[in-house]
Length: 347
Ligand code: FES
Image 1 (spheres, rainbow, N blue to C red):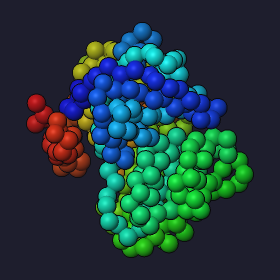
Image 2: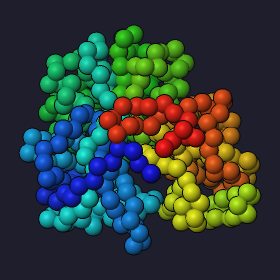
Image 3: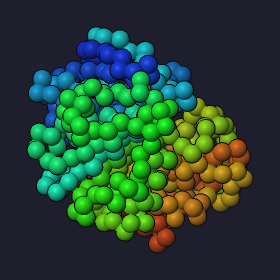
Image 4: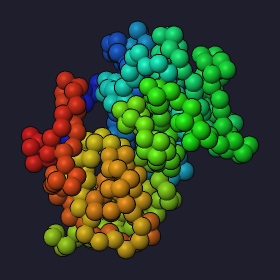
């Protein structure tokens, strides 16, 4: 289910390998697209012969209807990146117009940008926009190794000495506590990267009692605290047991088994796919950014689109109900506004 997708046919114009595992695609739309920094597009993919969709951040949009995205070929791919890497120039596919859930403010006294791995994609657009605005900005860019730093040259051209890279295999790590502490009180931090990095930033942000409104983030649902393994889902009400393979999401496995599940972002952001956890044998690998750290620690809810179980079985009730503990959820309306609703109020 989706509330704001508008699909159109696009053509792959140019493909460029940025690193051994990151490939850039230029998509030509039938008309000019406005792509604000932080936008993403959904792309229709085919996985094991079945249609599906994946969401990719826009690296750049241009006046002549070209939208550029970049896709990392994941070892633990659920099929989306594998499909994207089969594309060739002049092939056609369906994609949505760029849509922004990760908006860049204007007028902050200072911006700190933090990218981890392929999380660099929305951050490149932000760096470009902030530089054009003449804003005070610094960027920190972490990756496993120097040859995995996609867009490092472009970022160097945009930001010069204001970008610092942290290749982990050279022993370089971002000092999150020091960076958050050095940020002026009204400064804003924009972050996109794996869930472990995001959790560390959110924890430090809370520890230093920074305003929540000044931290904006996005992650990719493919990253977790544990490697993806297969696990079993039991639904007593339906007398159903479903095996979730290591390369599938719980949401997809349940949907294939005929369980009706609401979903929207499929990136662990909107909370629409959240389900009640009745019990768990093993550890829930929460990969969403919808629930707070405290809520995730309680293990009462799980976002089926991204979260998994490490080595065990989970017993769930899939019918999510808005409740006082977890309150309302946000969806994006057709006009692009965030709406706060209870699932029972959804059309
Ligand atoms: S569909 Fe949005 S969090 Fe799962």
